[in-house]
View (tube, rainbow, N blue to C red):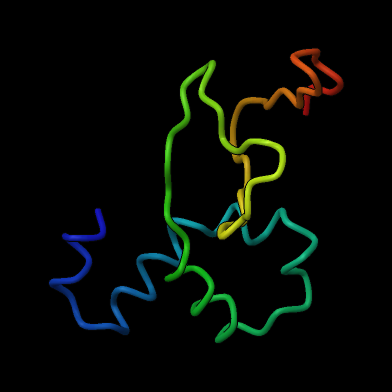
Length: 87
């Protein structure tokens, strides 16, 4: 999708990204008071990924360089190979 978007003018890219991420932006309290311009900028920075069941997103002790939003499904939090939470 990103390769397709790069062919469009930046303002159109922002409109498309804002539309594609609108549910996340509306439902996440962190963005409640953000201005429209801020939301447009944020939406262009989001990368959509799919993690199938069993995929490991991050390990304990990893240096995090991304922030993950789960829009569908659930995630298991493990500690010492035991499930401590399902979100």
